[in-house]
Length: 459
Image 1: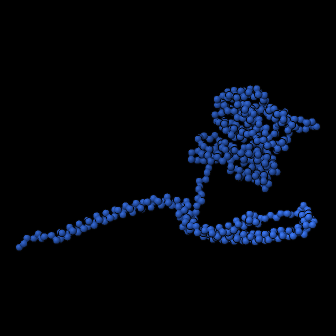
Image 2 (image 1 turned 90 degrees about the horizontal axis):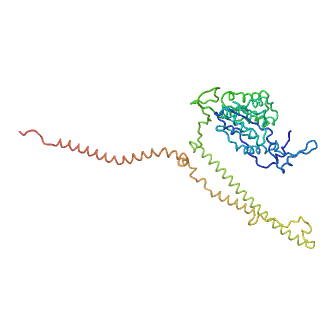
Image 3 (image 1 turned 90 degrees about the vertical axis):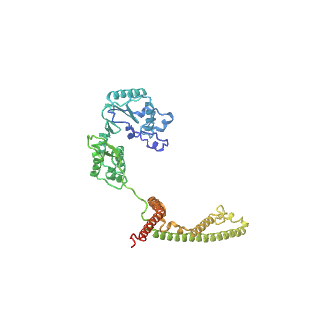
């Protein structure tokens, strides 16, 4: 039975109950889990009773008879979240053996255990608990203690998860999208396994799909087949189970895909651009003159605009004031002339105008606008932006980030030169006096030798 509940879903304003993310839920399964069981509840939503005041909302007519749901209907917007929360609460009392993980996604259950005995024991425990609660299990869909199971369109093994064969086949056998609705349906299938599709494929392979969804591209059958094959028969699904936009770092080598049966220690990493963009100009004064000329031109034109606008509004205000005064005077004369008939309003009727807004008065909107324009023109004329030293040719040297960099580089040099000058200022006089004393002593000694007494005997 198919019941269209789109109109009810459209007017439903209640907040949606959270449904677990399949990727996050499967993240609890590790390589230590080697055995798996999958339990699929049969007609799970019909196990939840529906409140009496909600039954008329889902009433429908079939072959002249009116029916009402007594259980939670399928196709209702809130049904998955409501059932997921109820089943989660009912499963909380379960005490699982150590090392066993129970993953729940709405009415689908996955049991991951480290060995076969624990998997069978936990599967029996969960089935008995569900039977006590009144749930029924689909026997044909039960997968008990297997090395690989199909769960949520994925093939779960001890090594990780992959898109299951039926899910891949549903994509490969999908008819070529012709309309936007068909392409959105196809993209929905791809989105279910988005984490397995690398980003490099999205731009190159999926670009025609998004263009077709926007109605700006017509994909041929050959192009559609190439898209499916390149996505789901590429190397990413023959080797490792790397997530999208990640790469394998093994030592000093990065791999896009590891070969099958690869052995070694690797890590999943992302790549970042080894570049840095400097947003500051090396010579910031270049082009300042042209920019200043343009700003001066803009300043001049804006000042003309403000002054002209203020003058125009002032002139219109004077004219409106005169017309308003004239109208009031004319009205007064007409009332006097038509007084025997009851005045102008008695003749005109309900459409008679008895009030003229005084927006040009002291507190009127027009007056305030004129005052604002006048103040703006005054501020513009007294603005000293052009005398700002920031527009100086060498102001860039003493301000901004470049000044900080130059200070860091030049301060050690300046400090060294300063210390050297101070040191040499003290040492040079001492050296000079020492050299002078040495030279003067040597000169005196030489002169004494030349002026000494003769050693010859007198005759």
